[in-house]
Figure 1: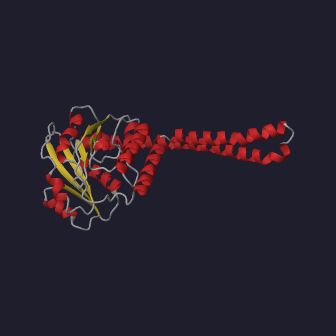
Figure 2 (figure 1 turned 135 degrees about the vertical axis):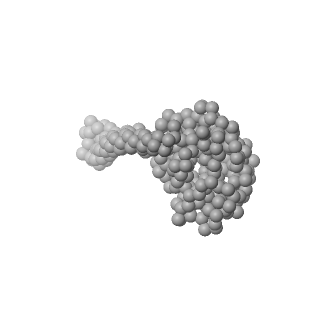
Figure 3 (figure 1 turned 120 degrees about the vertical axis):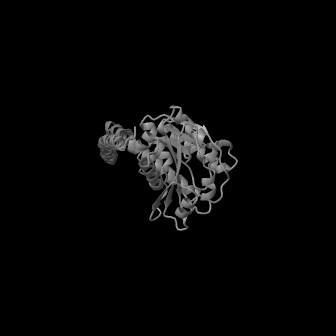
Length: 318
């Protein structure tokens, strides 16, 4: 029996949650059981009660608001604990068309994908303004290059994943899971597919960020942090190489003056260049240490995945 759990992170969404739940499918081709899960991220408007009233099968409640990424992590843990074979994540404000969930799940049912991203068609989506379209395209292009995953809508929260993929995803950011998750899927060689999905018009301003500059800073920081965490040696060696090349410039300058007999007056160039070379060497050493830490983290993740599989077997799940 194959079970699908649709998880909905929510924060003060009592007014919009009923419509979102009503639009969710009760059956999906290739799926035997469909259940709903709401993660109430510290709401004060009775979101949990509204979810239960409208037939949600599982509710997880945070005592205080912990952010979207934390709600997403809690949802994955609860969905897997409840025996989900496939997990779909959608928004509580009904941004994504619930009727598209069968199309989102289809590549997983067919065995073609580990993770499926709902592509909102950012380039010509009528609900997006020109600035948002530009930022979305730039962000998706950056994530595509850094992750090696061929996706066109990197920050779409409408996505599906297999149970095994969910067990291998370890989101560490406090801002948003979307870009870090993609960088991880690329690093772990998961099969990622994009499918076109429909969206509904916005009903309120985003609660994830207060302004465009804040969104750019938070998203950029998340991307850089996630990439550096999974590609530490490459990042630190690049930094070290840049510092060393810059350090060579004043050193070469000193050598030229020294050969001309004027080296005594340009010792500061030698000192500066040597300092930069030392910093470059230290950056490379930090990269090697960070790479060793990264290797240790991979072993811990593999152990975590194996423990999850053992728990499944103990619970009688194939």
